[in-house]
Amino acid sequence: MENELISKKDLLELTGISYGQLYRWKRKMLIPEDWFIRKSTFTGQETFFPKEKILVRIDKIKDLKEDASLDELADILSPSPAEVEVEKNKLLHEKIVSEITMDLFAQALGLPEVFDFQKTLYAYLLDKMLASGEISGEEGKILLKTLEEHYPDFAGKPSELVFIRKLGVPLCLLISGTGQVSLDAGAKLVSRINISNVIEELKAKLADGGIK
Amino acid sequence: MKDRTRPNLKIIGNNSASGGQYSDVRIIGDGVVEGDVECINFKSVGDSKINGSVKADHLKTVGSISVEGSVESDSIAITGDLRSTGDIRVGDLRVKGGIITKSSIKGDDVRLTGHVEVKNNCEGESFRSNGQLTIGGLLSADDIDIKAYGRSRINEIGGDRIIVRKGPGIGRVIKSALAAAGFRSEMLEVNSIEGDEIRLEYTKAKVVRGKDIVIDGGCNIEIVEYKDSLRVHHGATVKQKRKI
Image 1 (cartoon, rainbow over the protein chains, first blue to last red):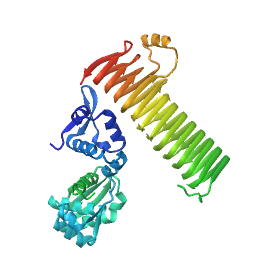
Image 2: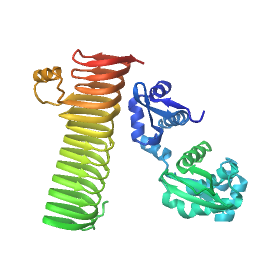
Image 3: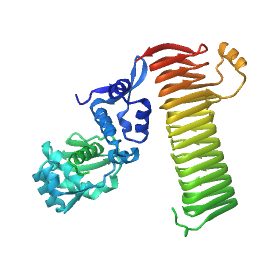
Image 4: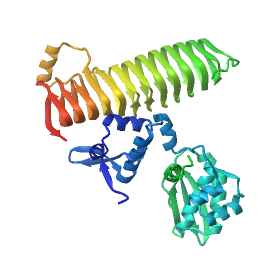
């Protein structure tokens, strides 16, 4: 289950880590603040975590900490862009980005020789949205142009991508933080994506593909 | 910040200057700096006020310094007091006197003597304090050593080794007599404490969770959850003990 929670106690028991480690990793921002979910229980306040995410993260930290310092780890796991350069074919080969997305990317922004992290992110976001059937190819180009033009201002900060359609007219927004969005009755919220989460996902995929 | 070609700033007496990038900043007397300051060495004696943020390799103050913004430095040494509205990010932090921030402290080696008021979190590799503490958020460090004076209050403490001791105040005998009579004048109040090795004295807490826990005299704890060992001193009250 995606939204299953695990209590701190159970987490420590299950993973064999100590309070000291957990707090140290939190301080180093290896575990994002918003994963710490407070809830009242009969024993007072307790902290819970999104089970799947935290278990994957702790495995990753344990795995990586053998050969990287905590500060280096923080770089890998933080929402700020990694230093990556990937060739187009590699992205296609690792199935990070599909052919169709790549074509759209070429039409909208031109095809670069190598993709840096941000370009990879744009393509990956587009790929996600196309794959979910939420947007059309033409709308995808608007998305890419918005990202290309404005995402650099948001880089490294938590941000969200919001896609709205009203009377068939698409509208793409970038929002810093995770605020509330309200729309008038005629508008439809097509998609809302937390970019930080996507970045993590993408970094993990790149790492799996042996790119970083 | 090794650019020695930048100018120095010197304020002497009752005077003000504008912020900017400097090599060394020196304030003697009653100085006001308007705007953000970035420098290598920041030294002030007297009363200084910065209407902006401070970024310095080293910051040293004797007297008081008040910053309307954040403070970032490799080392901060204060004899007197430091106030800030923004975050304090620091390597070594040494304060004798007081430190008050409306935001958070994030440091490596933090040693505080005197009055401490932090609105949000206080983090470090090592945290030592000797005095009255008020921390609205989480106090987190590998090594936490607190000598609490007066009425100290911390929302949450988390770390590896956590020691809370009672600061010297009135003698122990009078103290325990007062405590018996229902007076709790000197005590650290915490909602939750979580760590691997915990040793507490004169602490009132809702929950204490850890691996090896020692609850010494003067404590009043509602729930203790321990993994390996628990020792409770006869002068301490623990309502519920649970081994997990």
